[in-house]
Amino acid sequence: MTSPVSSIPNLGPASEAAFARAGIRFAEEIRAIGPDEAYRRLLLSGTPPHFIGYYVLVMGLQGRPWNDCKGAEKVALRRSFDQVCKSIKGTDEKLRLDMEAALNVLGVVPRRA
Image (cartoon, rainbow, N blue to C red; front, side):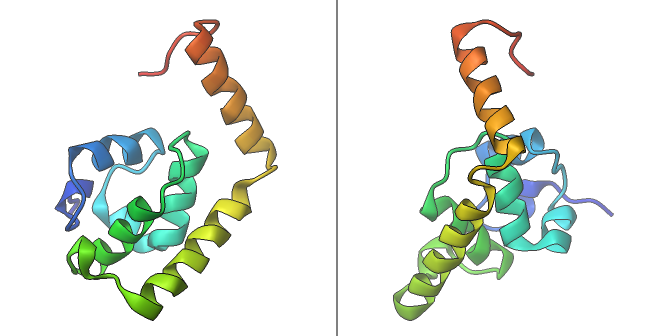
């Protein structure tokens, strides 16, 4: 059975659209690869990094409200978020996506649907 991304607590239509741009269509895919890899794929697809978006995903996968992240747990998640962001910096794929995004803004290449 497949469930929409928005079936994960804290994730709605905007998250579902962002994950679709990253090639992730179902909640089961996110659960299978885990939050770090799912978020890495979001970043590679052009989603700007945002710590709250990352921990909302982590909390949702645990079935917890997004604002349940506090204290030492939040500090640890920030370290994980920073590692995910660092993992894509300077990669050929990230550079290609950045260039494509810039060209899209300038109207040089057709926008992706």
